[in-house]
Amino acid sequence: MEINIYAAKTQLSQLVRRVADGEEVVITRNGQPVARLVPVAQRAVTRKLGTLAGTIRIGEDFDAPLPAELLDAFEGKA
Image 1 (tube, rainbow, N blue to C red):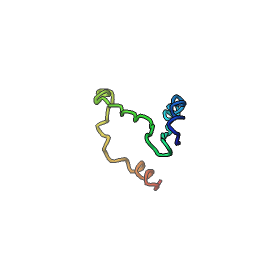
Image 2: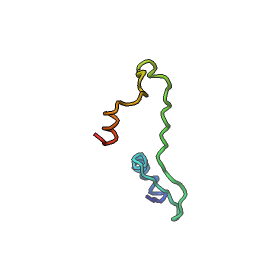
Image 3: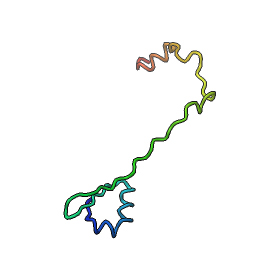
Image 4: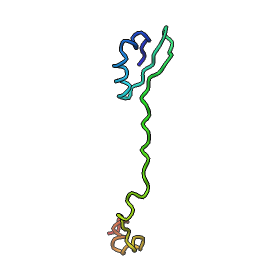
């Protein structure tokens, strides 16, 4: 959306609401773009390593070969 600077001054609250909803607003002076309102990029949430330590258990045989009948089922042979 484009809007001239005078209208932008009088409608700033509405423009900010639209930008917060994801829209981009270009402000013009004498028909020439002079500024752009865009939403602030959200900061990536920093993940804390080790928060699930001790809560997940992996079986000793997790990488053991599958039984033949189960492997056949996965391969569509059953």
